Length: 262
Image (cartoon, rainbow, N blue to C red):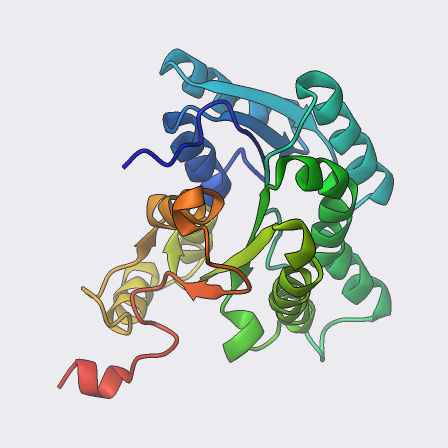
């Protein structure tokens, strides 16, 4: 299916690793101009080179998105280079384990800046261009905002905020024809997830336990599956879809696992 994203300028935060990298590759395969935003030039460039060598178009922009001034400056840099923005994918963030018992005010506020404040700022600064292009926004969010996880109050709060902003922006931007949707991620296999699993003494047993609870095919979601949904939501093929929080999770959040395994 031609998603009609050719030459569109798509901004992807956290586009150098994991889900962000997969999205950069999928959008590049759709012949979009991919603007990868990340904190490390070296990491960004690796993905840019891979995409370029495969015949795609990708460009990197360095920003520490927990700094509000970087959010503004990176959007300005993208506009200067391309003259437009057609889509924004808010993806960057980290489950940093700031809990109710082990956290404090400074850590909690820092985590919000890492995980949700820049979602607002990137959309705010990109909005004038999105209005011109009648573009779209896709927010990547986590199951922790709906299910909780334990010992991660700040990340859960940030994802609850991401979900709420998705619905709020969808309403606020109706008058411009800008669609806003979110993809909720549950158990997705990424390098960061693999690194976490390997910290456990019983890594393989824990992984087996987790995958056994994923109803559809008892396997992890792939980053490419998240990326494919992002490309669809960004395209005009989803032209009457807005304000939706779509779970690409093999049924992990909503299906009754007891029945699925019966």
